Image (cartoon, rainbow, N blue to C red; front, top):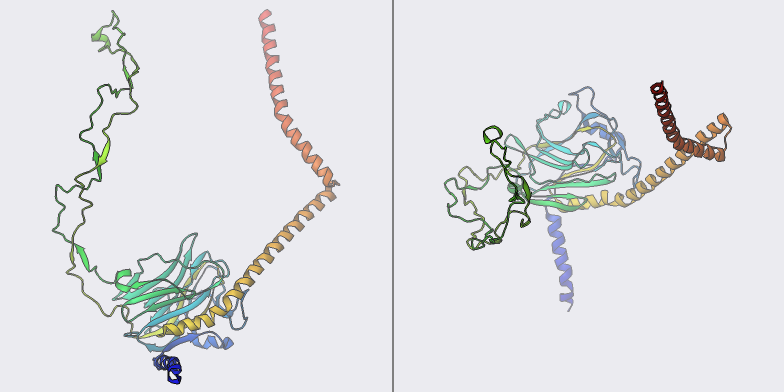
Length: 440
C-alpha cells in the first residue's frame, strides 16, 4: 500500500526533474528595476536630431509605482528610436518567445506600440525606420477602426506580413503581447496570456510560392451545367396574357384631312389595356435536373515550390529596438522578455502584467470617474460665473432672465405676423392709388 501511495509523488518528482532539466535560455529580460540604470543599457539613435525622448515612468495608474515603471514616450508628433543590445543568439532548432507589455494610457490615436528584433550588425546610434530587422511585433494603431497587431517576419531579403487580420487592444490598460516561433515551423500569438491565433508559418505568410497551383491545361467542359435553377421549359404563356400596359384605341379613326405625305404615318392614341397582367410573363423557375455543381479547377503540384527549412531561422539576433512614430505620446513599454521557454514566458507574464492588471484597471476607472465629476463641477462653476456677471451688468435675477427669454420668444413669434401685415397694407395702398389714377 505504501508503494502505491508513493507513485504520484514519484511521477511528480520525475516531471519536475524533466522540467528542471530543460535547457531554458533567457536571452534578454528588462523590467527596469534599477532606476536610471536603464540609460546605460539602452542607446538613443542619432540618425535624426529630433527623435522623441523616453523617460522611466509608471503613468497615472498602476499597481506598484516603482515596479510598474517602464519606458514612456514623452513628446507628441515625434519619431522614436531606442534600442538595447544583448549577446547574439540563434533560434535555429529552438523556440523563440518575444514578449513585452505596453500601455497606451494617453488614448493613442495614431502611433506604433511594437518592438523590432535586429541582427548584431546594427549600428544602434544610426538605427532608423529603414534599418534591416528580423521581426516586428506589436500593436499599430492609426485612426478609428484601424487597429492592427503587426507580425512581420524577414525572409530572404523581404518582409512578409501575416495574411490574417489581427487586432490589438486599444483601451488605456496595460496589455501583454507574446509571439512564439517554434522549430516545427508553427507559431502562436497571445494577448494577455491568451491565444488569439496560430498555425503554420508557410500557410499564414507568403514566404514561398504556393505548394499547389491551378492546372494551366485544364478547361471546364463546354456542356458543364452550373445553373442551380432554370426556367421551366414546359411552362407555357396563357393565351389571354397581355404584356402591354397600353394598346391603340380600337375606336379611334384617322382624321379625314390627315396627309401622310405631310403629317407622317398616322398612329392612333393609346388607352389602358384592361386585360394587362402586371409585368411581362416569365416561365416559372424550377431546380435544374442537369445541375452538376460548381466546376472546380483541378490543381497540380507547383514546379516552382521548394520547401525551405530555414524559414524564420535567425542566427545573430542581438538587438531589441523601439522604432516608432506617435502623434500623441504617453505609451509605456515594460517587461521585455526573449526566451526559448513558453511556460516560463507565461509565468513571467502572470507575475508582471498579471499582478497589476486588476488594480490598474480599477484605479483607471476611478480616475476617469473623478475626472468626469471634476469636469461637471467646473462646467457648473462656469455657468454660475456667467450668470453672476449678467446680473451685475443688467441687475437681473433668475426670474427676470426667464421672463426676458419668454418675451424674446413671443416677440420672435409676432415679428413674422407684423411683417406680413405691413406688406399687405403696402399692397392695398398701391392698389388704391392706381384705382384713383384710373378714375381721373
